[in-house]
Length: 125
Image 1: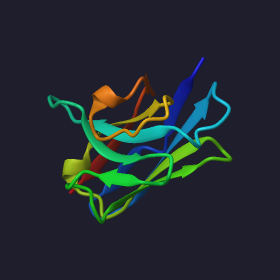
Image 2 (image 1 turned 90 degrees about the horizontal axis):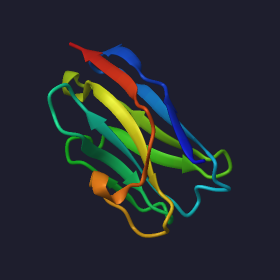
Image 3 (image 1 turned 45 degrees about the horizontal axis):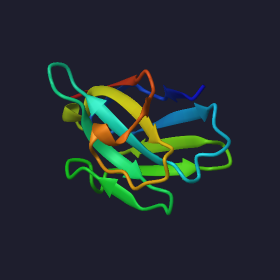
Image 4 (image 1 turned 90 degrees about the vertical axis):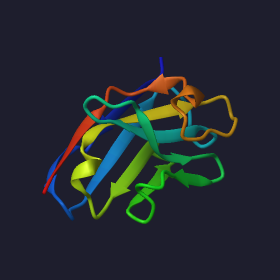
């Protein structure tokens, strides 16, 4: 079955960087998948952070534009999120999500069928 496993979370000081990874298994390729990163802070709803569709078409939440970069390694079936200039408000559990139906996906969690278990990011001031 399809599995998404996130890694790379941790604790950093404001201004620091982290790179999250999402290893996908149970599929032959993620080349045609719409995939995204979401986050959920304590007491808040899950929100879309960044999305990449099959043609490397990317979408970012306004709060992370210019600081975060999403990318896919189709050969490794891995999704990445490079996070720079981190702020305390970026503290959250970060989740990877995928839609393998071949249609365009956006920042809404409703667009996705498969989810990872999450990796925690803590940014201290």
